[in-house]
Image (cartoon, rainbow, N blue to C red; front, side, top):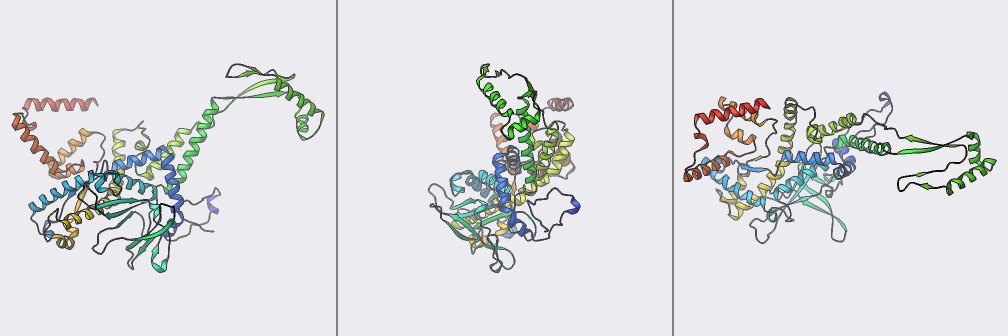
Length: 499
């Protein structure tokens, strides 16, 4: 019968006789494959060092220690001047940063800082293809904010489907396809399971459940990015296990005893009572009573008449292990969205040009996942927190909470900064930025953003340093003598040539 979907069994017959795949909705494929795919991926994350290390490397590239807020409200839409909006944004950024550093304030469980929660959210995405966050409001002594985020395991979201009630794999939709509520299957302290349904947003549009995934039209649930290579991961584990077993056997030897008696007599002895049976019994008794040991490492058998001892060396079964293993790891790295060198830590044969070309191809994938997987979670958390800040009056806003709700999109407009794009040579990258800035096609703000910094933070830091240098009568970096500047540039050029 025609079949399709993830985790399909392709068989080993000729391709011309294979049945054609069936064309069906992506939601049907995911509903069928979600549980085994998530279970196998989580098992790989827990037991495969390449997969676990690759995911951690990808997370560090996407968010680093945590995404940094750069509030950019639309000052015209919220009724502020550009200067007033800039001051308001800086105040909001400082308050939000202080809140994110306090695990007791941002995490409903009081265990993780905001950066740790972002990393956990991404781990859940790589494992199951989706991340689910519940936003709660409750007071806690010692902190100002009442807005807390709670990360929920993806398998808590049930996979019930009832098309008549617009329920698709635990997600209830409106007539336009937007999520209205989510049905979770939860356990209480006694292990009793019950279904609980939470609304997606409250009547003011404040997020309650944030469900983030990526995929195709008609898709209501996500699926792990490792789904296409789960078979490859399994093949690598088999190859590694068999090669390791062969390595153990290669360090051992086997011993066989060669006898002069015909094979037919031996086989007939096995089948019933023959004259050979008595001989075999006598032979067995002989060897059971003869045992000359050589300490803990072996013994010398006293052979029966007509027998010889032969030593058999174990053959190494796979001399092409490394090329095949690297081929499988390259496929896994491609699916994960990272370089083979980053996944394995093996930079043999890599050159500056090859690394730069690889980074140029992979970096857009990192930016895409940052913008569409990591940022939506942070943006939802920021919007919920900012609404409470304005509602309580801790952060002033034109028109108060009503003005905020009327211009929420303009007020919550923000950019999120992550780690900069990796470069193989910092000096060459700095020279390129200098040239672009001199040509007028790149601003200092863009250069700072590409490096994961905020130009306002840089200017404030330079201002503080200038004041400190003036107080101590220290020369400023830009006031070096011409001879010192020429000497430094010459040293840089010599170091570059040497490299």
